[in-house]
Length: 207
Image 1 (cartoon, rainbow, N blue to C red):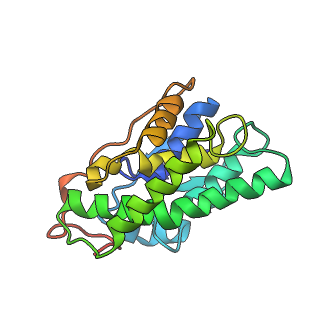
Image 2 (cartoon, rainbow, N blue to C red):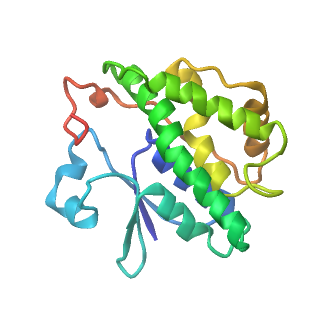
């Protein structure tokens, strides 16, 4: 099993985090998304959208999109409940993360760190997402059920770096982040973008 990933992407980080929490061995393949690595024919054959992460299974099957990868890896583990309603709630939070957390925190953070202009309204989306998260966690320790699931792993990946985007993490959400950090196997290997992520030198699908 090989994970094609970019170290500064929180979408990639959430997969690495789950693999660490599960204690699953894998081969990590570095992909420089701003150095043109995803623009090659070989990478396009792996993922036509030319994005990271991609999980390549031993039989050659490639799974793209972080929510799909998390779901696949968590199947049959405590990180994905067996009960239908709980699974639906996990899926609800995965959608919330992609639309509200990644869009409202990850996007503005990326633009701030790489010198790109902000998109109006995105920070307001991020601030609202943190407020929704905080209100939900005032009444419970985890997003779904009595223990951590891929919902927590997914939302944590971009939410915990909200200060990089100029957003403050509220109290209940901060306590939840501390609980997640205390889990056996937790890793925080998310790094800052390299210099070639700046728009003047980048060669990627983001320019």
